[in-house]
Image 1: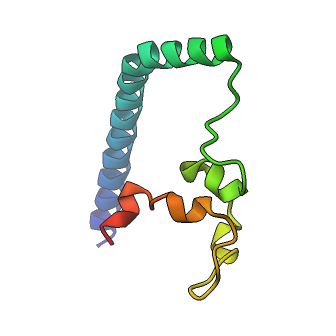
Image 2: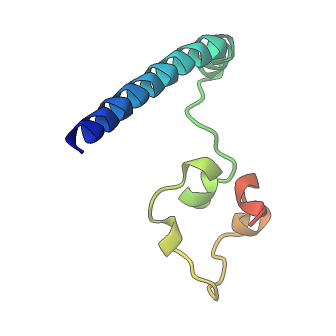
Length: 99
């Protein structure tokens, strides 16, 4: 019984080690593929002096849809009124529309 458990443990360690190596290889190749796009974007940011994407200026949770802070779920509830008009203009993110 003890030999089976140690074999299982060794197997799991080897499998997780291989998965870790594969993740590191994938991250390296994805980073190399993204270099041209990141270079172009960083040059644009330097040229125009941009800080971040600002779609609306009225509320911090409507400025950038993917960069909301952790308190936004507690700022509204199902029967609350929308305080800022941009909240009614901005559609939900694509990954939430299918729910």
